[in-house]
Length: 214
Image (tube, rainbow, N blue to C red):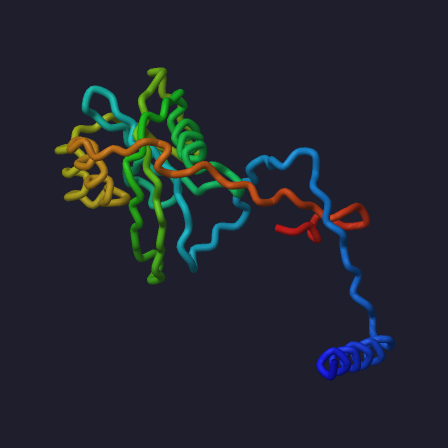
């Protein structure tokens, strides 16, 4: 066929031109025996694009546990929350962050919602997408890392609204979260699916970690 002949001519021509160039080494992929990966903490926080935060609204006797920031926006009160690690399930990350910031053992009982928030930091937009879960404390002894958390207290909704009026509530959407909870707007944890691990392939030997496919 004329078309097949033309394709063959093009392949020959490309072959001829590439003979004097460095050839690209093709790596063969193979599936490792274990597809899972351990979550990797974020080394550099880039805020020039939206980013994911996992957090908990910790509830006890219709009061809500907030933590006082010691570093970022120091002195303000916030729900326990933080950046998701690479390869970490969102609910797991939210529980981890809340337990790290309070020292409590927690049980996640439901998904409160996804609360995107846009703030200004040093004149630049800061866009966090926050997955907030309802958590029940299984222990009572607060253990705080004073390098990150200055204090932790239980608040009623009206007290949280007072914090906002005094401009010491870090994220004003916390008020909406509490109202959603009190209004019964809580969803199953399964509404956010567990992470799908599609990193089931690695490059064969002779490669460095930076060459592995992501």
